[in-house]
Image: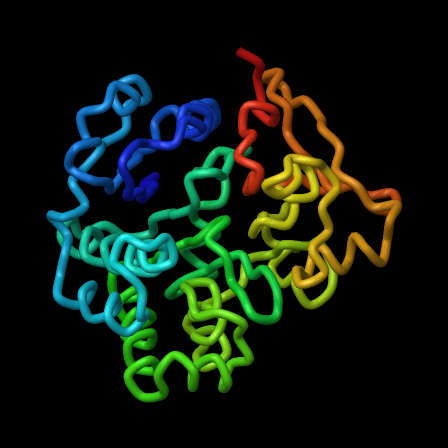
Length: 296
């Protein structure tokens, strides 16, 4: 299995230690690529967790510069980087001829073996599959990428609508508060059939394909409920998130922790008399160490 992660900045986030450790706990043999800045590629953490760190600028292209201009922010702005990383990954996948890969944010903890659903991903999704967050955002809490062509089509769409309508026009057409990669991906989903949604709930509109997985994925909502937002106070139920709305409407619903046969703690969504495994948690508070499957 191939995982592709991305980070650009002066120093690596300290919580990355837990991201890698958790990946290896469930996926000791997965190939993990990490695209980052040249001054970071020799950091010890990559050798410790057998992560292949690569200089992201090997995969720079004019398309990145064009999107930077269209977004109207500095190229090192957080929101610029989160959008242009998709083109870096696109170019990387093309260069290395990789297919059927996984990408997620660096503050995501993984709670399953990627082999478990890999054939299912390949058969169900012909382009991209993502964790949708709410009516105006899709989030890379978990993203399946069929190949570079799937990303090429989406990032071309970003450029095309921004060229055609400008930032204000895009905000108005798609009812966005802000133009960033989450809202642009949601616009892409609305305009095409190339961005599918992973099950984030075991029922209703946002439980499509749950019967196949028999588990759910977290865009950021389960992680905010478990670990809080930036304040770190658990129990957050964002009303602009699909999951948040369900939790607000059903205050008895919760997340519990169960231990598997290898003594690893795994989160489950508990509702009524049901317990459903959550495959990942997007820990918005960045307190990843609190939600590891095994204690240090």
